[in-house]
Length: 417
Ligand code: NIG
Ligand code: FE
Image (cartoon, rainbow, N blue to C red; front, top):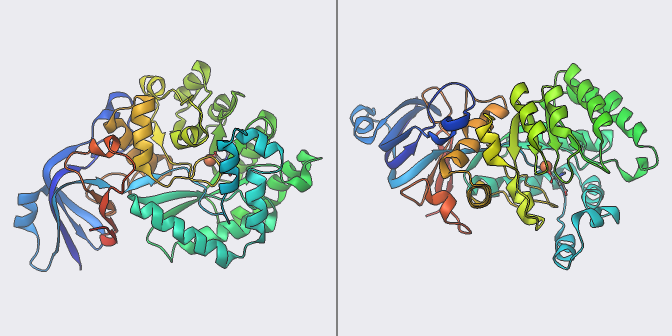
């Protein structure tokens, strides 16, 4: 048995608390242990205590990790990302800088379609290599679990290809993935004249094959004008639910189409984005216990200013989650610390609420609240040591590498010294 003894954390941010997502004022409580430490046996936390207590009780053969009076947090859980794609969209980025909008670029055949063309042309090996680069970036930013969506294949064969890449990544990087099927990300060009045929393809061919091969836990959809409206979204997500998938939704990002209300009607696990969601959507999500996943990186990177109403959602008792939305178009950042900077500065979430949203609440939104998202006995020893004494510095400083080292299941996977 291998024992790891972490000692001398200026603050051990445990997030210990009730075994459920945190709501209201609970989001401000981090279960902070000053001068803390932990013991982990074979990658599982066995005790949380003061550093002195850990030093007293650690077995002789324990491997000591000295946090050096720095802050230690659970590994971040990023609950919304599109990390599997070929190429980039740097050219479109420059166009946007020069004044063309995201929606105009999509209407000209760019946007999601351009990444679909490149991703279809790439082999599984090529996609895997690029995804491993992305995985390294996430780990370097302190993320240890990542939700990963398909959605740049948009044919039966190509969607399955992306989901197999996600499955195969698990043995090639310490980053843990939660796979989501996003066949309804956009209507591919070859179905543009008959989008209903594409909806039927998703329902009758893609979903059953993804379910048969056990390649995804969740089904997601881009519910938006010009992509999938309310009715097709209801059809696809209804079918996904029947086939055993949990539901997530890209909802009310560019326009308010009533997608958050639909998420509540379908008892979706999450409704994501929500930049345009109003009181009715917030109230419906509260009643149905839908978790909002807020993605300020995409607001920032699209040069927009309307952030989702995080304060109203927290005050309404929603278990808010923060995520990166990492993707080549609207949010090219793998950094949860960057998201914390945006969420505090522009959405007026407190640093503690931000940390809760990107750890324990995110873990519950992925069905893993019992295993990750907090530092408590029985959970995985996934944690990051940051170059700070106080957790609030995470949201305060921005634009620099912040992790000192990152551990997954008790093993060091990133060391920046
Ligand atoms: O979450 N909104 C839809 N999907 C992504 C953007 C994907 C892309 O532009 O490639 C998002 O913002
Ligand atoms: Fe997204």
